[in-house]
Length: 159
Image 1 (cartoon, rainbow, N blue to C red):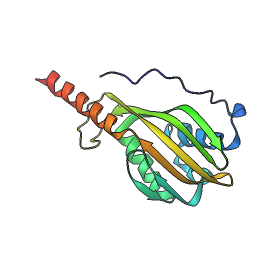
Image 2: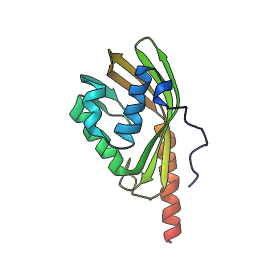
Image 3: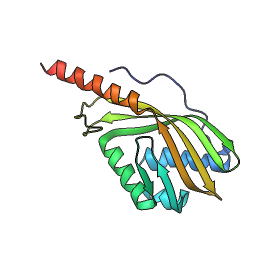
Image 4: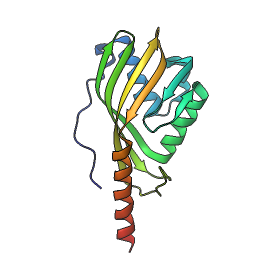
């Protein structure tokens, strides 16, 4: 399977990022990439809302925690590459690439043990220092096509 396109992450040195961009960095690099779900209450407002790149609409810490655990179980070595961040007023948005090794049924596709990836564009809305709302547009069509190609390649190699 073709690997994700070569795009470098931005400089994520905390001292070079604003307070809110640092919260976004912790969200992706610690909560997602390292599954440090104990940090969820530190970065999210108690009643925060989330519409993820893969489609679900969630409210609150526990629903979000279960989503993180589900996705990181389906994709081993789940990683979020922060390619760009833009801040204006109480919002931070960006361009990301998400990827991991497909090890469990995902979007109806059997595990291929291949790396899959997709792009996402988040918009974080803050209430003070905490995230109040997160909306992420994800390239689901591209992800599903890559899953289909990967699954076909695995089926073909077995024959």
